[in-house]
Length: 430
Image 1 (cartoon, rainbow, N blue to C red):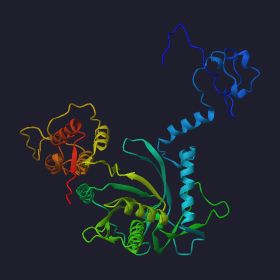
Image 2: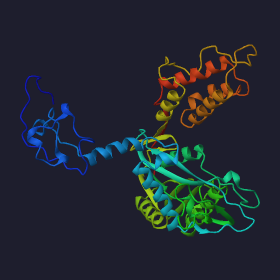
Image 3: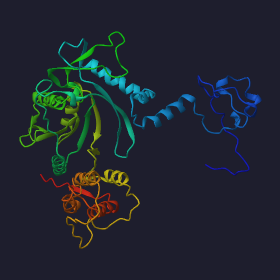
Image 4: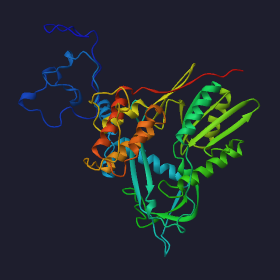
């Protein structure tokens, strides 16, 4: 609401007193910043400068505690590059303490002396912001990871392969859900890797800035899988698949990341991507039972209906399921500074013929390959750019300026059509 400049409406209700444990002024007020005489008898926490007396404040006054929370919300959106920076923000410290607390709850490690002839692997804090579809930070995610590249094959680990769901498999999952007319839901295992069991003898150093005061020279003996270890993803998958199998949720023959359970004429489908799980059933009660089953065994974050998964934006409706990657396209254009270019109507220019172009100007291979890789990922929901992308992908070993121009045409086409995607209509007939 706006008011005329010459008048100001009187407050209908006096604002609540300003309450805080801190002082408004960090140092004694100067001659030009003398508090109003009506405020001199009040505590220091509620004194106002003479230019802004309390009687002229018409809106609610934020306390210093509230302002502090607001400031820290902005700080938490920035991913610290060093542990020292993270320790300055309460949200990051809380997330780091929660991570170490989970280690104790799951009995992941034991503090001990390093045996003779053994070596300890270093650890590192990884600090990331977890964002939702619209880019809003919903969680400060902290992981203590082991530097697994220091492990020796045959000594510290043996088998390491662990399958993850392919984008084609996820598309088939969504298509079948639309075909059978059931909702797809998502859940996330917060500390998934820590549940996997290790069978090798592995030691890691104490995390930076969280060393034991009593035993600073000790190391941790790892009992369960730790992020960063070569065998960690495999250990988690084996534990999860064994748990699901014990509850009659079986592995699909054609895809070992897809699990199913049949109950009479109803079916439950579960797709695994490391610690992210999407699931759905023709009977809603079966979905609820599966949620309870997983929550009783693991610490899960139930995210409700599937709306965002692996950069796929999923829109579920009564008519079908629509999948696109609009946010991924916007991020891609911003990354390569193409947000202000003129859009194109087609992914290829008419009569464009690309060849090796030996006389053309050279282009940095890393840049060209990065764009091609991003475009190939986009083909999961954009079959209209597959042909043009594959043509440009032929020249990744020695890209020229003409090839880069062809790639930019695809990006300009995506700028014009960011919301294009794949539509799976409802077509189940009893």
